[in-house]
Image 1 (spheres, rainbow, N blue to C red):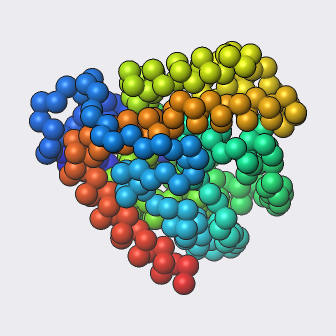
Image 2 (cartoon, one colour):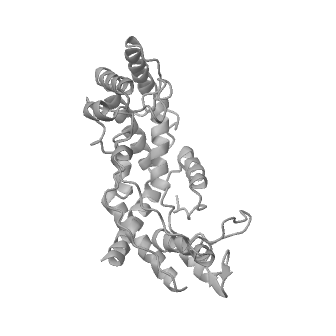
Image 3 (cartoon, rainbow, N blue to C red):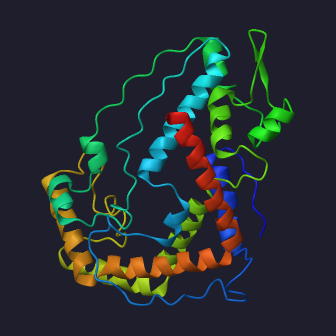
Length: 319
């Protein structure tokens, strides 16, 4: 399959469109006529509880936390360069410390975390409040963000190459032409979609979303979830949602760290250990990811090559 061009900039549009690609099982090599609804062999199932250290095949095509931080800073540099053309500045922030690991992929899974935080997100509980952003003047805001309301019927460039060939979506501020979406979007395009053949950066992530969704419906995972749910019910906790059981158990945003929530979270982890839910789910999800990689080998090879080039550019911008 040829590389796909960048999809619409909105995250919801990207997810919907790329999900269709994954569901279609677009193939350039590999599995041939394999039924996409079949359940792939999971191989040996490990005994796993804490999900933080789990590694997945599709991670080879996705930047890790350190690389994401570099990309964030590189995009800030590009945005600042754009703002300078109009007499403004954009602060280059540190993006270090961002996690994004698999700690809560299958819900709470670490006994120590459950005992301390209950069902609260440790990153939120321990995180420092973000500094308030400075107020922007009307022109500065337009130059940075572009128009607040954009007619979806109006075409805008999907790559920096396209943006440099046309004025689609551009606006005029104080007599100067401003790119569609403002400097923030220009910074994004220059880093993530410099050419017309750039593959949407959400492709591998959405392949992973698709694999996770399919694994959730897999009979082996469904059986393990049923066993986990029965274990929870034995202790008076009624839920069939191992990832986000808070609502089922009666815990809202303000009660996620209460003694009752801590007790429930600790039991949640104990039941996952007893049923090896995470080990089973992990093995099955990996199998779905491997099949997607085989079905989309050409596209993912392009993704990997473009990731390498993007890392090179980001390193130059932030050095």
